[in-house]
Image (cartoon, rainbow, N blue to C red):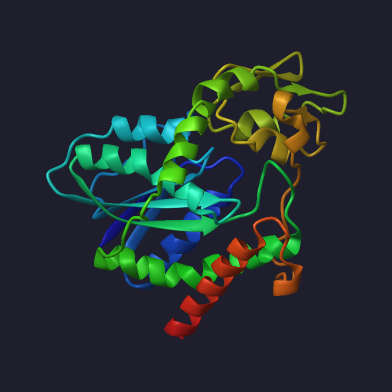
Length: 285
């Protein structure tokens, strides 16, 4: 069986999860590859895929605009099986509304949307999680990957029931798609910028160019945070969102946070998520 993961990622969290699930799928004797959805690459090749897995970070309780554009451009199929794989910084049910538009488009294209996998990964905007929190998030990915890969292989799974509050939050926050293009025009760099061009290379939208040794930000931003999060000098300022700026990668091999060390924000939701992943691992051992 052949699975293709089409992955939109900014700072790498979603790609990291995709690679883990794809590796678990391969360990079961299947074929899998991860295709990145980027402006500097061609349209992902999904030909011959028995399973299509569309992976993305949740942006404002919605799927990112590039993901929806990709799905709208897919050819229709007579029979196809698809899954959604999402990452977000918190395990709130409000994030579940992000499956609605992708699932609707996939169904119109002829796919059976068999299930959805929601993983929690550390924030690249709003605030910085501790490395212990990031490590426990990653441990949850590792413990869940095998079971989720098995679901993909079997064609099993389910989509979340999306409540009214999640639908309302998604509708209100849908303004992020056009607003991101405007906000992104306000991104700037400080004098700490060394002109390394990493932000240009990392931007999945091809929205940044170098002029006179300095990055210039265009009007096609989706607020993925690749530029500000990955800047080695923390020189990128993200306009109206600068108070939420997070810079620098996480250490996923730090000692995992204990229950007592889980952050106060959404504490009960994080604990439920961690305990569920740990129970899943125990069931498969």
